[in-house]
Image (cartoon, rainbow, N blue to C red):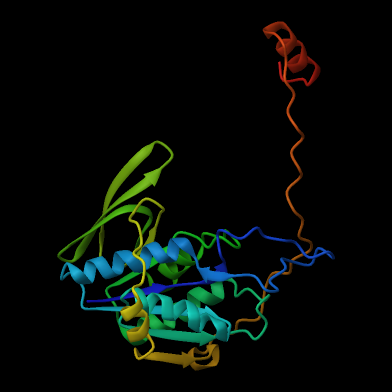
Length: 252
């Protein structure tokens, strides 16, 4: 069985995001970019499934700018077998929308015929949380979202999901789409020898036109702004003063 893992190039989660002065978007100049953390977890899980003998090949896929090659090389260094880059934009500020991404992934899935697609539940830049679900709808495959545990059992996958009330375990038929959550695993660090080996692993470059997909944006960003600054707290001398302050603020 093949596993496809979509990965996205995003601002590194340790970087403080800055909004452009004119409010048209996020400033990406000289900003460190990395693999989306949830996608990194998906790559790790795919590699573990291969190491356990449950799958034969792990294919990493990225859709975006040419610089996403670096993100794919990271996935290859972690242990993915090969990669596909779909160059869908020239401007690093252009985000490919979930529906276009899902359509391209659907075309790749039909070409590669995997038994499983493992993806992050969402990207930390736009928080859409939609690509996996859209891909499931386009392919007519089963899906399991917010996975914190994945076990392949014959032609089925047993998935533990994180829901508001706790944990839910479901069984889905393969082929299937699984979107992974934070607590599924802890991704490995790529060793120097594996980083060197990754440079020789196959990385195919495609365009949306190769798959007959139009990536013209359907959404336009009206404005971008930073969250409101929190006001400084105050120290009160007694419970009575605390209650009085809360009353003044309308909290009680």
